[in-house]
Length: 221
Length: 296
Image (cartoon, rainbow over all chains, first blue to last red):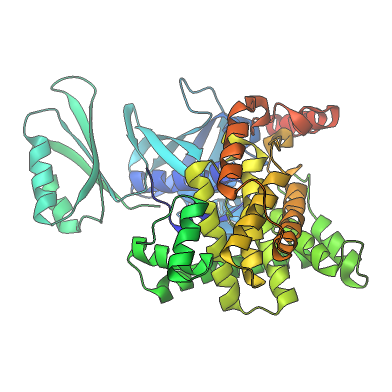
């Protein structure tokens, strides 16, 4: 059973009005920004379910965009995110949509910028907790509560051991770990949630592994 | 060492160490987070600062919710009781005004502390800040009382739920009122047993209360439910301070609340498909806002 802290009960400090529709939305935006990892020029938000029905009244739109601009859920400027995005020359659009088999509070964020186009899907599952469920066409699952390492690699024996060996060498504890693949021997992904952030040097070492094509280290929001 | 899951276990720890609920909760926090007393106190002070700011803003600034549906009522009540005692007394009226103030700030995309949720964020600051004013308490006293509130809230989280989607408004505003009642009782010099009696009274008062937000927004009736949550907490604290005991012990009240929540139909658990949300006016408001979302 989960052990509660006083600050799970009184907290978080957040911009209202809703932990799921506002704070959770800001966190999804913020993680999408980190996943993209480069200059963003435009963002399209496809809103599903309750997000589509109440996004204006809950400020879900402003919160998502604030996340894309790098604000956290307690940032006072969250409500001014649209004006700030316009000033920064970032275009944005909110589109109610039907996403298949999605949680009622789900958004698919399509980002364009210096790294080309990228699509990130996430759900706000209550109390400000979120889960990222897809990056581009790849289905995966992580919460953003922990420093998270995401790799794209070829599904071959030994890749996982090579990565975890490097993490071990830096004396970092793995809290949760999941492996996903589209098809045997083809493109695969690893999600490793850790108790502390992996140093940049370790990430460079992981990048040198032959089968690995991409490495992302996402700090918790 | 300072581990507790129920009100009874919390009470036992208070008796063993001769300490208040607030103090035991501080020790529990230090133990589990491996942080110093200063660090956990400082973190709670951040919560207090945000609560104070929101309460002040809601009483003095021109607050309007994002939907345009609510705002300005806290200030209206504040102006009304400024120069006259009001029928429920100045302390009570200010508790209610502050609870609405924080709740209105929440609806206007202002900064608040989820206490325990955003939907119920006005109750604890409303009851606690106004009681502190009446009792002449220091910030240190209020911070300790906030730990009292979270200690009691934890027992509800472990044995029932704090979420309106799971347990209805009784689980959100009811829990907040119970937490506030316990905190105010401790602030007023009541012992741990009195605090839990106060919490039991507050929760019993709203047992079965449904969560029925109009148009799905945290505004109608949430802001006024926050107002009544704060008044509920103060009445419960006064009853406990007078030595009145809850015939049904706090832990059993919490369990009953959970079971009531379990049998509540989903229409009445935050889905905005029952209760006030499903009245002619509630539906009309929803329709109007929905049209606006569509048309941009």
